[in-house]
Length: 387
Image (tube, rainbow, N blue to C red; front, side, top):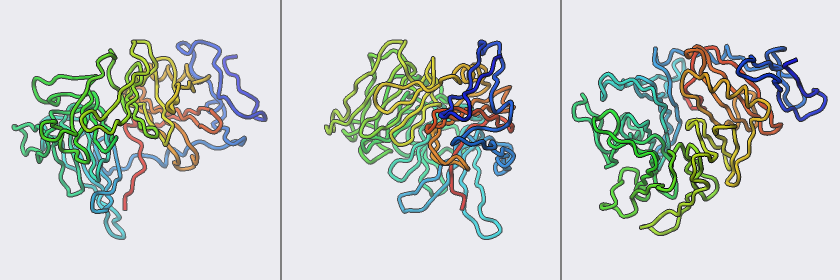
């Protein structure tokens, strides 16, 4: 029989076991057989996904990212990124608690529709985002967005230019009082002649995300992880150390206190067969715990040796990853609806983006559950403020 389950009277529960290769066997799970899940040694119903149905707040646009942050004046903003533009949730009044502003990408980049996921980070009370295609861009809560560096002179109207970053990047981070850009594209890919520098990390001046030129401010600069042959694929900070993930390895970066040489770089592995964030946007961290998807398993990481957590669900997870129709992504969740403890969510769009397979790992009992989101391809899951 292709389905076995630990007895529910003997926790902890390890998920299910498929005795046949996942390539030829559809996953059989306790959830699919009974439509219930085991949690805290009790049977619980699954998520009421009908309550999560998409609201028509952005018309036909697909929400790619959403972030609530506090600006330099102490005001709270909720910024939205979609495939067709950017916007903000603006608090309203009773009866109309909020309104949505939506500025299309075509206002600055004619014919552009975003397909690449965005990296978003808040630094010094300002929100920065990039995805390699458009320039590094900043929103500070005044209703405008600012291109940090070069801007397309043919765009109508252009973005408001500030700063001197030379292009874009696939990943952003804040570390040691600086804004970091990893895996850069110079200039950004919508301009002709752009080049990807997959092992490059650029860092801004101290407390200034607009200044990136060493000749202007010596606390800014760049370095290349030259002895690693794979591409940078994300960043997490654990305690006082930053970890630049690569597709097949991890690089530890610590602050030196020397303005001219601000970072000490040490690679965990440099070969093509190391453990790293092979699927870049599946890397996420909560506190001192990070989760990521490598070539062979799903791992947790807290600064030491990565620990595999795929267990008996691994083959089914990788079967979904192998048939994903859009970029999968992951996130750590501390509390979400009735999920009141630490979880890692792995979102895998399926079947030409007609639904998404959600794999959720619960840290307290080290078990996975699988839920299907039936409303298309999820591109973002966020806790945000609307009023």
